Amino acid sequence: MFNPALVSLECHDCRAACDLSQPRSVCPACARPLVARYDLARVRREVPRESLGRFGTDLWRYRAVLPFAADFPAVRLGEGGTPLLPLPRLAGEIGLAGLWLKEESGNPTASFKARGLALAVNGAVAFGVRGIALPSAGNAGSAAAAYAAAAGMPCRVAVPDDTPEAFVLEVRAFGAEVKLVPGTISDAGRALAGWAPAPQWWNVATFKEPFRLEGKKTLGYEIAEQLGWRLPDVILYPTGGGTGLVGMHRAFRELAELGWTDGPMPRLVAVQVAGCAPIVRAFESRAPRAEAWANAHTVASGLRVPAPFADTLILAAMRESGGTAVAVSEEDMLDAMTDLATAEGVYACPEGAATLAALRQLRRSGEVKASERVVVYDTGSGLKYPEAWRAALARRAPGQEGTR
Ligand SMILES: *Cc1c(COP(=O)(O)O)cnc(C)c1O
Image: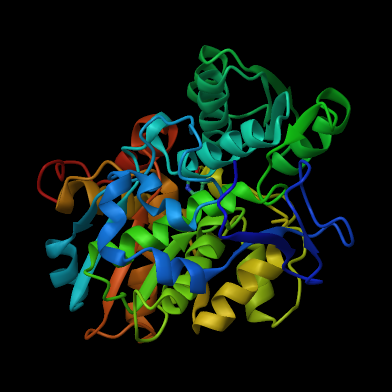
């Protein structure tokens, strides 16, 4: 069932290790997130970098460093394997040696949440659990529902009651049950305790099980391989629960240990919005943990995470990579959506556009230099965000359509 190179699941905070003999969620000793540990010396001996194509072009290409055995019949919908697009016009305008966009909207259910939920649902199958449940701001619920449908597994999703209808329709379309909860994703998370209790419903909320992180880790492997194993200097990531940021940090550490890349790790930048920036506040005040953000608000629903459970892992990823944390204004984020569309032909989600707005800030402050190679993200399709796009277009001066 599991990859023989997968040694254990280890607690990031207290270092307790557990095996895979039973369904695991968080650390049994301290209830903090578990992280998969591989025997990378063994992978290094057995799997040459050149052999990756044996497993295809989607994220299963990196199967040697994923939790499942080579013959495990994974439930797949075509997750990962997304393009890394050069942004030549914006690179010239901003002044950078290289600028690329990791364009994630081509994933199943149109966001990068597919990477994590593909792995979580396959983990549920491998553990033999009967159903999954999670709170979601939108995209995670859609992805979970799609993979649960493909696996023939029941799924319950709790969402804030102001979640855009596009997401709710999509979750229902896949046959999952939806509960609308007043408040934010934190309130939706609390609602699961009564409505979808463990162990009958395995909780696949961000960092409440170890597999979603493994799926997001493949972002780092793809960026490395797509740049010819020459890592970029800086990567900006729109940070809600932080799985992608922590996942890339893990990937770059593993890649160095595998000997597949050399040179320094990219500086990882957590991008948040002014209306919900608990990680930026913790990073700037050098706090060990993030405090919950009061009255979180933004149209970027994936960034409306007032109390990220994996705060210690996110802060470690930024500090150990020499990165930083940036909050952008709602207006700058909306204008960056327009920039990506008009300058590069990308219809981005607001979360993704926030990384371009943050890059502009870091160029102005000099924290990113003109000589550097930079990767920004589009984490999902703009098509699911009519409200944000209406606001972005309303900001364009009349008569500027088509000329901006
Ligand atoms: C969930 C989400 C994010 C935030 O990702 P995390 O890994 O939770 O930090 C960013 N963008 C979109 C479109 C999302 O759905």
